[in-house]
Image (tube, rainbow, N blue to C red; front, side, top):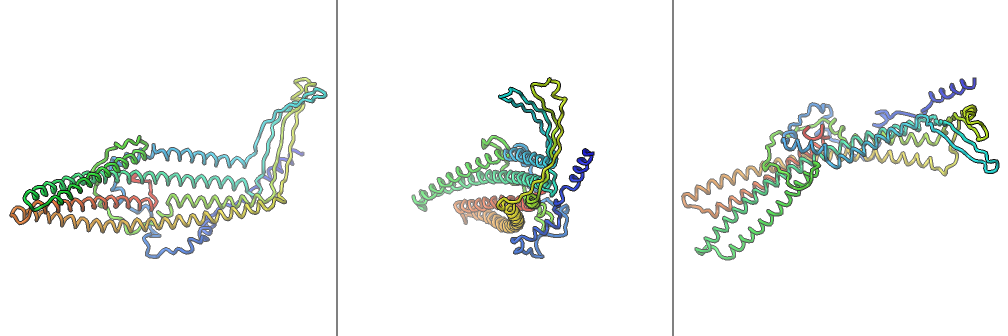
Length: 466
């Protein structure tokens, strides 16, 4: 009879457990996000670049996939497999996943084996005890369930942070790759510029012999050549370091010998005029903060439940015997105990109440961090688009200037043939052309960098070029 009452009592308590536990509904989380002080001061214009109704799947990524080369695709795949930071992050994520599983064990009974012996020094008798003990804290108010769900939310937040790290590495690789290509082109152009300057030096030497130039002219051009050769060495070293950076990002030994092409593949795809708002909402950092808000929600619930009474059921099954009994009598005296305990905090100097206040403050903090992440995302998109627009205009102006310089050089060559101009003027104009072409390389590099920045700002769907 008593056994049945005990079993029925345990079942009824178990079924009524988690009375105070609540799931964070979308409405509850949205209300928390809307309570942000940061968000309350930010108004997104109606004519903004994001389309609130468009589907993210409708967006074309040709403007970023056009940057892909076979070598770059291989480098990114290597980076995703062998990058040191990603290897370490994988283990950290695994630890958080294991911690999540541990958090769930508090919902179930714990069972332990007990074996002890004691000696009475007066009577020289010995008591031996073997038992199995079980303890189960009934989760009346959802404290343990909230702790488990907080750990689960923390795991998903960490998973999105891990995705963000993959995206960051995947964006750093093409940046280092294109920086190295720009360095290769600049090396070639600076060497050509030095050759043109040496030709100019030779003409100054000829002019000095006929009296139309002097030693000062020769000294100035010699100093310029020396300065240019020093600058070339600086560019070469920077290019080696960019190769080392690229090798390190892809998990290779950083010897600075990775070979890349010395030209830019043309990028012809225009940037879309607007983007689906869904892209911004699905950014990995914003999703990570979303799960941090969920975690904070559960932790507030857990802190509130900790202020309420807790009920624990314990039982033990075992046997005891002494050295004055026969050895087989050890199992002829079984003991079975079942009991329960109710613990309620009465006075703890306000520690539990203050803990609730701390958890509420932490929840507010993470809501504000979420709003800050959204604001930063908006800024990244705006900045990248503004920079891209400016770079495209500069590219247009620079290309027109280069075309005019080429036309001017053609006219100068014709004038030289008829004797109305000379090679001295021609070389100066060719040097001006090289300067503008070097500036064009810098602008083309910026264009590619900003496209990658915009891709990252929009959430880097499927990482880079995948």
